[in-house]
Image (cartoon, rainbow, N blue to C red; front, side, top):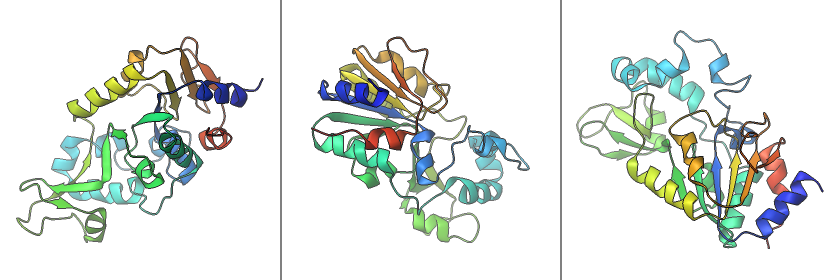
Length: 241
């Protein structure tokens, strides 16, 4: 029996599936994986990406932050791929209860998923650092340099978790509760090395665990079905019933 056949059987036998995903879920939509061979961490800039995408750098060098952010992080024209669409279909069929994502691209929601825990925030939400007025991504992208609030004139920041920031406790709590209540956990497109997000997996106590990672990350998880193929390709074969 192939890995895809086994995955189909696991999904068929589950009633409360949770999907935990990372950057690899969106690579098939043209959004680069930070840590892949061709990802941002393997490209050359004046500063390393983890420095540019830090809270202290944003506050000290907002122009350089936004230059990099616009050029390498934002992908407003990206479309949901087969993985996003299948997960939304599983949710609509009552099979999948929650999506937990480390991505900030909003593609799960664009595909139709409703219950999404965004561990690292979303580029689609932005707010003034002083008066907290909300701004659209279109407003941020239309700014000549650093986007400024049209009310108080202060800098606008994206609602994303930067290096040196902590994760939202309410989001973490919701994600943990979802994993604890799941009878199946599908992990996909994540290296499982970024904490505290990666630590959420330990809260799963169900019997069905599947890992969909091209590089085999997560293959050391006990009892896991490991499939080393593109996530979209694998999930596209799943029949929802």
